[in-house]
View 1 (cartoon, rainbow, N blue to C red):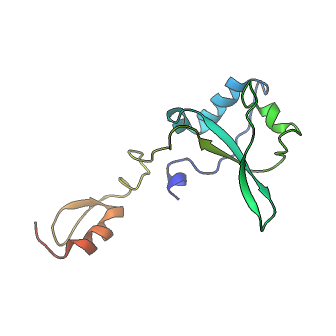
View 2: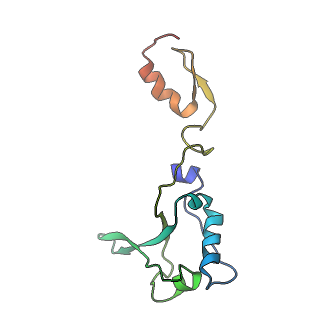
View 3: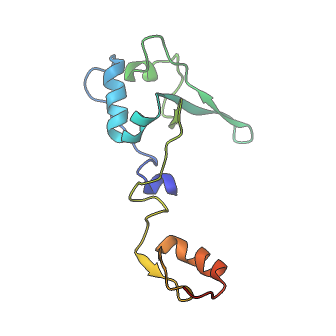
Length: 134
C-alpha cells in the first residue's frame, strides 16, 4: 500500500524508440519510477516455478545492460510475465514523500494533550497518551 501511495506500485511501461539501447531503456524506467535515481542502480526480476513452488529470480543483466530487445528475446524467457524492479545499493525511502505515512491526511488535535498530529498517527498517539494534558 505504501509503495502504491508513493507511486512505486505496479505500472505498465511501453518502450518506444531504440529498443536495443540500454541507456534509453534505463531512462524510460526512471521516467516511470524517478526514485530509482537515488538507489545506485537496479536489477530486474521475475517469478519462476509453479503455484506451489514459486520464487523470485534475477533476470541476468547482459554486459551492455538491460534493453527492451533483450527482455523480449527467448534467452530471458520473460514473455508476458510481470517484471519486478529491485534497487541495488540502497532501499527506496518513502520519507518526505507527499504520500508517506508521515504526512498523510490533515493535522488532527489530540483531545487529551491538545497537540496536533498527522491524521494517520493520531489513533496510535491517542491510545498511548493516557489522558495527560499539555
